Length: 150
Image (cartoon, rainbow, N blue to C red; front, side, top):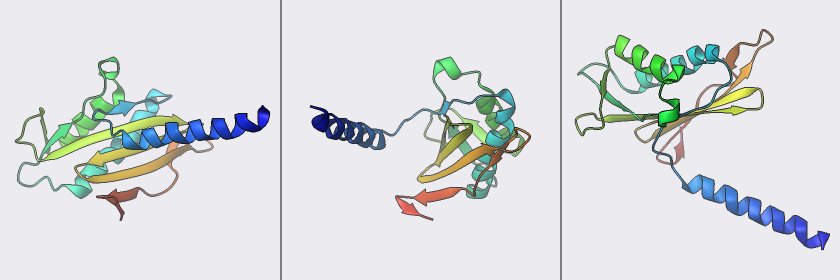
Protein backbone atom coordinates (compact mmCIF):
# COMPACT_ATOMS: atom_id res chain seq x y z
CA UNK A 1 0.00 0.00 0.00
CA UNK A 2 2.77 2.46 0.92
CA UNK A 3 4.68 1.60 -2.24
CA UNK A 4 1.82 3.04 -4.29
CA UNK A 5 1.26 6.10 -2.10
CA UNK A 6 4.56 7.84 -2.86
CA UNK A 7 4.41 7.51 -6.68
CA UNK A 8 0.76 8.49 -6.62
CA UNK A 9 1.52 11.63 -4.57
CA UNK A 10 4.41 12.53 -6.89
CA UNK A 11 2.20 12.09 -9.95
CA UNK A 12 -0.53 14.28 -8.44
CA UNK A 13 2.01 16.96 -7.52
CA UNK A 14 3.45 16.95 -11.05
CA UNK A 15 -0.01 17.30 -12.58
CA UNK A 16 -0.87 20.13 -10.21
CA UNK A 17 2.34 22.03 -10.94
CA UNK A 18 1.97 21.54 -14.69
CA UNK A 19 -1.42 23.22 -14.50
CA UNK A 20 0.13 26.23 -12.79
CA UNK A 21 2.48 26.85 -15.70
CA UNK A 22 -0.42 26.86 -18.15
CA UNK A 23 -2.42 29.51 -16.32
CA UNK A 24 -1.31 33.07 -17.06
CA UNK A 25 -2.91 35.50 -14.65
CA UNK A 26 -4.32 38.70 -16.08
CA UNK A 27 -4.27 40.63 -12.81
CA UNK A 28 -1.40 41.82 -10.69
CA UNK A 29 -0.92 40.14 -7.33
CA UNK A 30 0.77 41.48 -4.22
CA UNK A 31 1.64 39.30 -1.23
CA UNK A 32 4.31 40.74 1.02
CA UNK A 33 5.22 40.74 4.66
CA UNK A 34 6.04 44.32 5.60
CA UNK A 35 4.91 47.69 4.27
CA UNK A 36 8.56 48.76 4.04
CA UNK A 37 9.06 46.12 1.35
CA UNK A 38 6.96 48.21 -1.05
CA UNK A 39 9.80 50.66 -1.76
CA UNK A 40 12.39 48.27 -3.24
CA UNK A 41 9.70 46.26 -5.04
CA UNK A 42 8.00 49.27 -6.63
CA UNK A 43 11.34 50.83 -7.54
CA UNK A 44 12.43 47.62 -9.31
CA UNK A 45 9.19 47.55 -11.30
CA UNK A 46 9.48 51.21 -12.31
CA UNK A 47 13.16 50.94 -13.30
CA UNK A 48 12.34 47.88 -15.44
CA UNK A 49 9.60 49.83 -17.21
CA UNK A 50 11.85 52.87 -17.68
CA UNK A 51 14.62 50.74 -19.21
CA UNK A 52 12.16 48.94 -21.49
CA UNK A 53 9.84 51.74 -22.64
CA UNK A 54 11.13 55.26 -23.34
CA UNK A 55 8.87 57.91 -21.90
CA UNK A 56 9.29 60.06 -25.03
CA UNK A 57 6.22 60.24 -27.20
CA UNK A 58 3.81 60.07 -24.27
CA UNK A 59 4.19 56.38 -23.46
CA UNK A 60 0.97 55.06 -21.99
CA UNK A 61 0.94 52.07 -19.65
CA UNK A 62 -2.03 49.92 -18.74
CA UNK A 63 -1.53 48.62 -15.21
CA UNK A 64 -3.10 45.24 -14.54
CA UNK A 65 -5.02 45.92 -11.36
CA UNK A 66 -4.74 43.60 -8.38
CA UNK A 67 -7.89 41.94 -7.03
CA UNK A 68 -10.31 44.22 -5.20
CA UNK A 69 -9.10 42.87 -1.85
CA UNK A 70 -5.62 44.22 -2.66
CA UNK A 71 -6.65 47.50 -4.27
CA UNK A 72 -4.98 49.69 -1.64
CA UNK A 73 -1.65 47.85 -1.41
CA UNK A 74 1.42 50.08 -1.19
CA UNK A 75 3.27 48.55 -4.14
CA UNK A 76 0.47 49.35 -6.59
CA UNK A 77 0.10 52.87 -5.23
CA UNK A 78 3.85 53.52 -5.41
CA UNK A 79 4.21 52.04 -8.91
CA UNK A 80 1.48 54.33 -10.20
CA UNK A 81 2.95 57.40 -8.47
CA UNK A 82 6.52 56.69 -9.58
CA UNK A 83 5.56 56.01 -13.20
CA UNK A 84 3.53 59.22 -13.37
CA UNK A 85 6.41 61.15 -11.76
CA UNK A 86 8.69 59.89 -14.56
CA UNK A 87 6.22 61.14 -17.19
CA UNK A 88 4.30 57.99 -18.09
CA UNK A 89 0.56 58.12 -18.67
CA UNK A 90 -1.39 55.51 -16.75
CA UNK A 91 -4.23 54.45 -19.02
CA UNK A 92 -7.42 52.57 -18.41
CA UNK A 93 -7.83 49.29 -20.28
CA UNK A 94 -8.23 51.03 -23.63
CA UNK A 95 -6.58 50.35 -26.96
CA UNK A 96 -4.70 53.67 -26.96
CA UNK A 97 -2.14 52.36 -24.48
CA UNK A 98 0.54 50.35 -26.18
CA UNK A 99 2.16 48.78 -23.13
CA UNK A 100 0.63 46.42 -20.59
CA UNK A 101 2.25 45.97 -17.18
CA UNK A 102 1.52 43.21 -14.67
CA UNK A 103 3.46 42.17 -11.58
CA UNK A 104 3.18 39.21 -9.27
CA UNK A 105 4.69 39.47 -5.80
CA UNK A 106 4.75 36.41 -3.56
CA UNK A 107 6.48 35.59 -0.32
CA UNK A 108 9.02 32.79 -0.52
CA UNK A 109 10.43 31.71 2.81
CA UNK A 110 11.88 34.85 4.35
CA UNK A 111 12.16 36.54 0.95
CA UNK A 112 9.94 37.67 -1.87
CA UNK A 113 9.72 36.68 -5.53
CA UNK A 114 8.87 39.46 -7.97
CA UNK A 115 7.74 38.65 -11.50
CA UNK A 116 7.09 41.52 -13.90
CA UNK A 117 5.44 41.20 -17.29
CA UNK A 118 5.65 44.14 -19.68
CA UNK A 119 4.08 43.34 -23.04
CA UNK A 120 5.86 40.12 -24.12
CA UNK A 121 8.84 40.47 -21.78
CA UNK A 122 8.95 38.77 -18.38
CA UNK A 123 11.46 39.49 -15.65
CA UNK A 124 11.87 37.72 -12.33
CA UNK A 125 14.01 38.33 -9.29
CA UNK A 126 14.27 36.86 -5.80
CA UNK A 127 14.55 39.38 -2.99
CA UNK A 128 16.17 38.32 0.28
CA UNK A 129 16.62 40.00 3.63
CA UNK A 130 20.01 41.37 4.55
CA UNK A 131 21.43 41.16 8.08
CA UNK A 132 19.45 44.26 9.04
CA UNK A 133 16.18 42.77 7.79
CA UNK A 134 15.94 45.03 4.72
CA UNK A 135 14.76 43.57 1.43
CA UNK A 136 17.44 43.44 -1.26
CA UNK A 137 17.55 41.86 -4.71
CA UNK A 138 19.43 38.58 -4.40
CA UNK A 139 20.45 38.57 -8.08
CA UNK A 140 19.97 40.56 -11.28
CA UNK A 141 16.65 40.35 -13.10
CA UNK A 142 16.27 37.13 -15.07
CA UNK A 143 14.48 38.03 -18.30
CA UNK A 144 12.85 36.26 -21.20
CA UNK A 145 10.94 37.50 -24.20
CA UNK A 146 8.56 35.39 -26.26
CA UNK A 147 9.81 32.31 -24.42
CA UNK A 148 13.52 33.04 -25.06
CA UNK A 149 15.92 33.84 -22.23
CA UNK A 150 17.58 37.23 -22.69
